Length: 252
Ligand SMILES: Nc1nc2c(ncn2[C@@H]2O[C@H](COP(=O)(O)OP(=O)(O)OP(=O)(O)O)[C@@H](O)[C@H]2O)c(=O)[nH]1
Ligand SMILES: [Mg+2]
Image 1: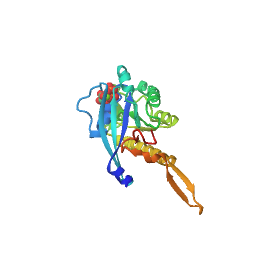
Image 2: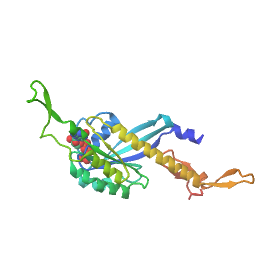
Image 3: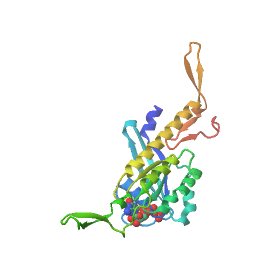
């Protein structure tokens, strides 16, 4: 019964997206939530907020990701720092055509591990991988009539290889995806992977809480009977965790 009630109400989880200025955080979120890039490209001021519902049909679960889009500009760092609290998911974005933004991922990762919840699932995204495709077609001199692709020297070029991104994520044991917000490439895949990790972590902690609140007693015939303990006075909030009952409960 309790489980059925939980299913009918979506679980809410906070996700924060961070990274240097102009790496494409806002474009990524717009693509994920609204299926298109923002109409006008403006730097985020402080923090913006969007909600995405994710359905797991096979698991009969629906969750809501409350996504906090932060400003990468240094002067907003203090504002951003306030928003890590209670985050169950953190997305760190860099721009594959900007080496400095990749080098700064270490700094963002440090912030996440220090300021977000200890069980926060982390995803690193290398954005703008469409720069690989930015080529111009020119007529081929060796084969008249045919055309060849040439990289336009004025367009941004890749400065961070895919392998470097993979190695970094592997070293820090976090998930990694390369995406293009412009081309809507791999964005849903990346966020759905994070959503699944958050749900797995939530359910694992729920089981751990259930187990730690139950005494197991072995009867004379060897059967195991379960005795309820502290857990009985905790109620599921249906959101990101359990709320304790107020004064008088055994949790207090
Ligand atoms: N080539 C390419 N450019 C992109 C992509 N995504 C975003 N951009 C460009 O990158 C610039 C910054 O994008 P934003 O989404 O505003 O970046 P941000 O990380 O939110 O920046 P702040 O809000 O200032 O922290 C814009 O000029 C976008 O057009 C992408 O997938 N490919
Ligand atoms: Mg932004």
